[in-house]
Amino acid sequence: SLEGSMEGLSGTMNTTTTVGEGYTWLYIQMELCNRSLRQWMDERGAGVSISEVHSHLKEVSEGLRYVHSEGFIHRDIKPDNIFIVGAPPGVAKLGDFGLSCKTTPLGLLTVPLTVPEGEGEEEE
Image (cartoon, rainbow, N blue to C red; front, side, top):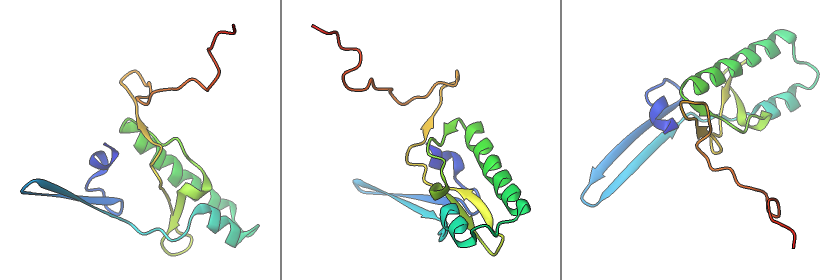
């Protein structure tokens, strides 16, 4: 899983599993990110410098490179799923991995692809 692959990375996510008689508890502790890139852009308007844009783009690219190197695809990159954390200018971090999936050694997705309703049906 993505959580298992990223376990122990500073500032990302900490997981702990507790096993008892007949039960297992999984505790997930994640960093609180108060501001998305969307909110940051709305707050700043046209007052964003090229160096800030370049810095955040580089941080997002490095995050995606790492996720891809671990065999995952995010599948939902948008300003609402990128977070700016810390004191200005802040650091851009990827979030919301709810649609992410693992790839196979050949680079194929492991999620099943569905045919849209009505396609592939023969007309009578």
